[in-house]
Length: 161
Image (cartoon, helix red, strand yellow):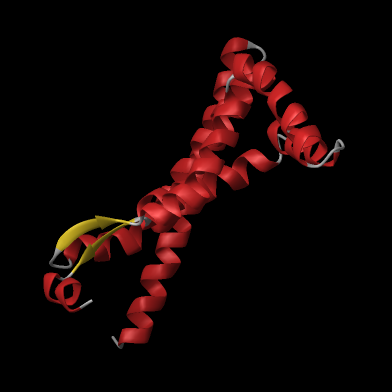
């Protein structure tokens, strides 16, 4: 089998595996609803963020496995984690914690009126922090980011830079 065919089939089966895992997550949600009768919006946010973060891990897993096979010292891309990961983590925490959601809603309003002099910034931050449709996207990006921020650097290459 040629390299292109091998690569195609490995990517195809990997995609099928991710779809299967997503389907299992959906079935688990239906099971939870049938057992409890109903699920609160906050519990649903926790569920979707958790499942989508796991899917983000799954998407990044092939690249992480290739990093594990490399030789060298482990490094962390702190700039990527701080610039992208920290704001995403803040949004995730606000969305899954009802107490923090209530408390933090005052901060964007105060900050936006202080910085912008109006409610424009608050409207954007408020929409992001209460939008349930953004949770799966944010979770996938966050899960992908966590695995792709860790890499191995060849010691010889690190010395030459």
